[in-house]
Image (cartoon, rainbow, N blue to C red):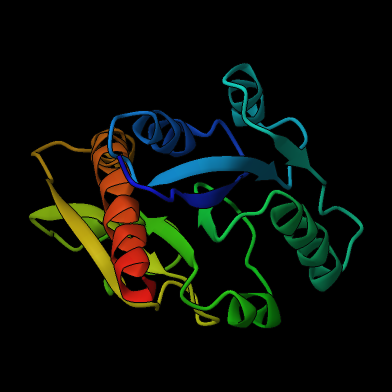
Length: 197
């Protein structure tokens, strides 16, 4: 059993399937992290309800009508109040301000549905299929001010099958993400703990 579990806040905007994967993995023996907060820019995000049902603190603040920096500050206050050491983005559909990302350098993690550096941004599955790629996949990476450009932590490949549509490929990539994200996060925080010990 790890002596100190890294405290993690998860940012979501929707149903929170990756958040759920991270949460349930955190309850397995020897997991080096725990979820202390699930926060969202969408008060109606389905993932908030799940987090509450599982006894996790939640926070929601719509970004509508707010400056980006002001919204980031509200989200960051919730993170700090929860005592989180890391921020994990799990379907968080907001680009964070450069100042915020720089302040949390090395402690904000994201998952992206492509084999980065390929297909940064949106429509990753469509672009992979149209390019004739043999595989799509998912990448866990550190967040930097430049979109989808931070250091790659781990990746998993997913075969593109004949007749795949962006939706059918997305379903399999999502399954792969649910395996990859908890493992990548656990390995990263454990490595950090050893370095700072």
